[in-house]
Image 1 (tube, one colour):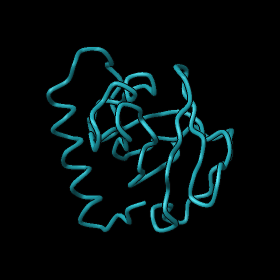
Image 2 (image 1 turned 120 degrees about the vertical axis):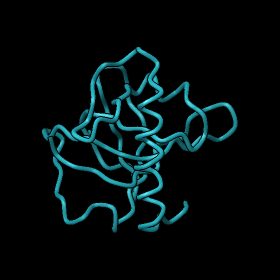
Image 3 (image 1 turned 180 degrees about the horizontal axis):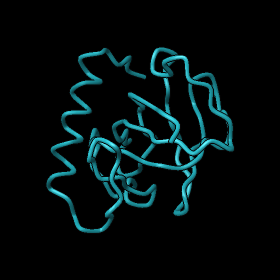
Length: 120
């Protein structure tokens, strides 16, 4: 999996802002930075490398840097590198906001490659 640099994180955050401005009218939830929050179901229909912000719960760890994320519409894998945690500790009871990019393999969404995470 690709390592994300600080420049890449900033790029995703800036791109996410532009993505939210275009809006599809399907989800009126917004993050603290004004970016539209999408559901796991919506993520499954997005293009590879599309910036996303999702809210929900990290149900369990699924591997060294792999986690299962769940919202009211379903589950998806998250890939979170050690550096992207920023010292945060998360339990399955913590409601979190996750910033990242869609990682597709052909027609199916494999995971969200996470660039930032915070408890909300």
